[in-house]
Amino acid sequence: AVFLFFIVPFTWSTLVQPDIRMRIIIFSIIWAVISFMIFHTLLKHRNPFTRIPSTGLAILFLSLCAFFIIRTAVTALNPPIASFFTPAAIQVALFIILLISCNLITFLLIMMVSQRMYGEMKEATHQAQLNRETAEKAHTEKEILLKEVHHRIKNNMSTIIALLSLQSDTVSDPSAVRALDDAANRVMSMMLLYDKLYRSESYMEMSAADYIVPLSREIVNGLSRGKRVTMDCAVDDFIIQPQTLFTTGIIINELLTNIMKYAFREKDDGRIDITISKTDSRVILTVEDNGTGFPRGFDINNTPGFGLQ
Image (cartoon, rainbow, N blue to C red; front, side):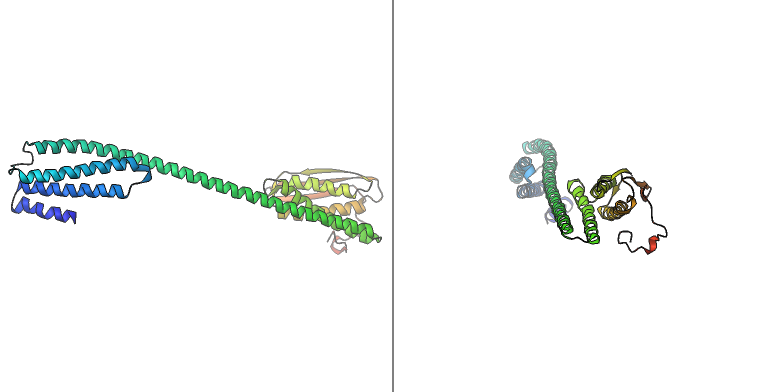
């Protein structure tokens, strides 16, 4: 709308009926309107980071608006002039004011951009700090919660082991006693894993050596019953998921329980070797003993024992 208001009369006073005074008046009015619009926009949409340079620019454009209004009035009241470049006080003032204004506008615009970038970077940094603190707080709460869960599960398993042991003391049938002890050992192997998870930094994975070695020693010590059994563990230190460790722990528990029950019946001492080696994506578990071995005619595919099954 401002452009149409400017271009139509300006074209008329240039091509149809040339009139320099009219062109100066139209030109001054348009610049007064544009300056006031910029002044209004700067005041209305001031950014918190650029309040000072925005206010300075607004005052500058308001001053330009006032100057062009004065120029319009002076041009209308003075006699006609022959050219835009006719030496006159108002023309000289226009040149000086526009020169100063251009420099001030450039300086204030640079200041606005600089302050806005600095302010937005500062705000983004502050927001990032808040987000980081929130994430760290949530992570800490999650760690505390997971530790509490593992701790409670471990305590519950410890209670189950104690109840099985008490029940074992109240029965006289040797097979029942062995069954209760075996059940306690199975629970103990899982309890030991939760104890390790409770003390570890990560709950999604764990070192195989950190779990298998203490578990094996715990089982052998609990079932030695006065026999001198030495154990050698050669376990590669690699990371494995807890679910796989559960299964591996139960397998080792069954093998060691069978060894301690049957391998050293006729001996007062013995030796057990546990080896876990990892090559690429394949892991090999070997449990060996120097006991009596399987009885003659033993078929592992047709054994009624729960452990070997």
